[in-house]
Length: 470
Image 1 (cartoon, helix red, strand yellow):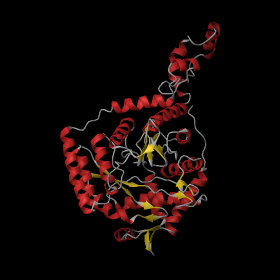
Image 2 (cartoon, rainbow, N blue to C red):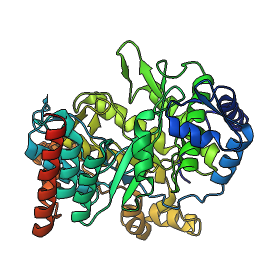
Image 3 (cartoon, rainbow, N blue to C red):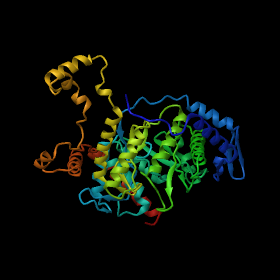
Image 4 (cartoon, one colour):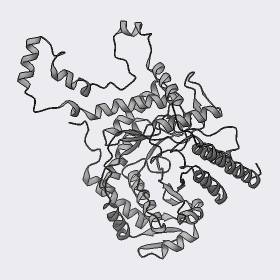
């Protein structure tokens, strides 16, 4: 009795798109200018290097995909929040002004996300705001330091390419009793291996003390991918297959990179248009294609909006994109509180996102919580008719709280009750909830660990300033 809707792309067309993506990798291949990578891959049967591009036979990609499809689906189907990306400015939760955050605001926003989310996911999990007032070259380093000091589970996901910097970051995590996850962008659209990350990848692939995540490509329809279909979708699938195959072939680890994306790019605004109707359509398409690739449903998704502050646009876009994804089987949502693609973070929006997800979860659950075929409907109706109502009926007492959602900040009382209660609106309730969550964030790194993290951070910062003349 759950709510859903039919496929955007039929099964036959999905299979054809995947077949054409495999043909693309054989005919057009992947640009590769990294000498070691070219040498290693061209030694493999079924891979040909010609005029700067790696070409992959249909058989070798098909076999890789067949192995992928043997993997088991996750049984975790509960609704959960995941962390955002790292933004540059904050939307003040009290004035709605978009501005540069103070360091205390960065720390409080970090505590908020640590408290309300499961941590890292496919599309986020670093701290929600960069520390401002430091040189841009120190931004990643200071973000990782903040994650280690003030959270249980946030951090990683940001690219670092300086070996010594990576060692300092990893040591901060170890001092806090955690593992560092190094994120690297493997492919760049259209169909090009990123040579900038390969030396670092080889350096740390065999390092058992550091986790590695290879990020998926982000093709943009009309900019780095065709805006005509199915060509744009064929490219997206080809890039997803290529990055997953290449890095699993090169790596000593088991890496999961088979993520299909295609984002809408609007030339009028010269921007990715997150939260737009076109975003919903493309997301629907790539999720269906990824499900077809894997043989089981994708569960991770995102809140999306290009709004710059908390307003009608942000609530409309975020509600619609989350509901649209949930109807497509998505259950874990990242980019909490993230606005204007990823330029702005709003603590207030993050709390409102909790309410959006609770609303959507209730819609998706449908009638499951209060459906009972075994109850004698005629007896219930006779008893209600006799009493003139069902408010006191035993089934109302049993099923009322099962059917009606009670755990949210929305108000449903009448006008007089609302006036008598102080005329509090949703934003007021969310601000109170925001303060409560931050005040009750109970993580505190041990003093000895905090001192050691600070010592490593000081040493790492001195190194970076010396090396890059900051």
